Amino acid sequence: MKLRPGAIDLCDPDVFVEHGGPPHEYLTLLRREAPVHWNPPPRTPKTQAPVRHGFHVLSRHEDVKYVSRTPKLFSSHSGAPFLWDIEEANDLASVQTQMIAMDPPSHVKYRRLVQSGFTPKMVGRIEPAIRSEAARIVTRVAGRGECEFVTDIACELPLRLICELTGVPAGDRPKVFDWSNRMIGADDPDLSNGQEDTRAAQTEMWLYCNELVAKKRAAPDDTLISKLVHAEVEGHKLSEMEINNFFVLLSVAGNETTRNMTSHFMRLMFEHPEQYELLKSDVDRFLPGAIEEALRFSPPVMNFRRTATQDVELRGTKIREGEKLYLSYPSANRDEEVFEDSMRFDITRAAHGHLSFGIGEHFCLGANLARMQLQAILREVLLRLPDMSLAGPIEIQRSNFIHGIKRMPVQFTKVLTRS
Ligand code: HEM
Image (cartoon, rainbow, N blue to C red; front, side, top):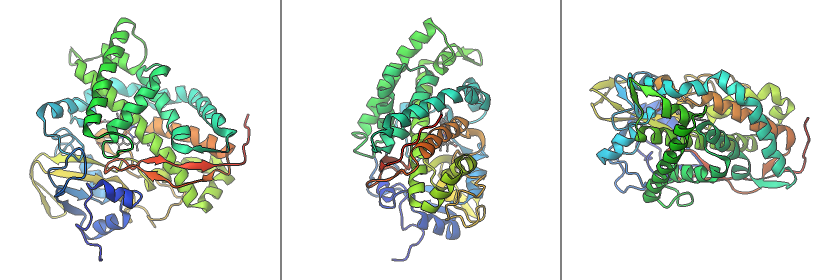
């Protein structure tokens, strides 16, 4: 059957399982033939969080960039920045207390409260601790000759880091891991028991955060939750709901993304053995560029949404006030107008300009941190377990939002020690 615009429903999570990720042939067709394409709502919803209204799919780099940088016309607040429709007014109001769902001028005031914890200087300060943690993670599996890459290696560092930043004690880390999986995994029966489970996870996180808040109120420290407890925006203290939702946003955004990116990186190595060999020939030289290229090639977040604040036109297509726009990062990152030979994975290309961290107002707050963690753990894996290879099938998360890897069994025979 000939592929045509409309042949694939981008809210169907099974599409992403069937294609092992984003349907790139289809996205390429959209970039070429229908760069502003109307995806109608599904007749039979296959997701837990329903997509009731259709949306305009933006597949070109230039358009994703323009819309992300123009919050006046394309809001993150109205309806929130997620593809699904949040119909319950209370639920929407709650999500809208997260800075990711705010527009200027409020957005910048909330972002300012936490951004000092994410500057290159701050990230540099915790780098030595992250590096030694990465070494510990690899040492723990090194003698086994095989492991499950996602749970044994990829998930550890992001989890530890986000817990330390927010002030969650070590013993409670497994709880945060479980909550974050259930928050993001509603459409995958392996990760969650559906929408009710997602809600339950959220409530558990809120209750937990309340306890943290009480502790930080009594004994302030330099964790993010403590800063939020004592912060003020325009003369008023943050509400319980605002702090709780900050905690949820940071825990989920900090965990799922970096973990999946770590796994994607190694998957790309297994799929491109010549690039894997090249990287190993000089890890220090090639790793930073390889990380950028992997981010370009396999972004773990597949989309965010904006909502038109007034009637506008984009490439001749009328967008009505209130209609949704779907920013496709995997497509923008393969735009042949920006990246030469864009379907080729090449660790030596300078992959600057990819949109995996978004762009503009909401540019990922954790980008520096994510890059540093990726560098630390991948360097350790590549230098100490240099013949790591795939040892079984890779399992992809069933989701229309996160390109996630649930399981990736790996094996290795050589174990090198480093000073
Ligand atoms: C490879 C890893 C990561 C990827 C691919 C990623 C991706 C993204 C993207 C695409 C956005 C833009 C949202 C939008 O425009 O609506 C974003 C925002 C955000 N990210 Fe990340 N992220 C990553 C890691 C992290 C980490 C480690 C943290 C925190 C510790 C984090 C925290 C955030 C926050 C708080 C926002 C909202 C910023 C705002 O609204 O101003 N992210 N991320």
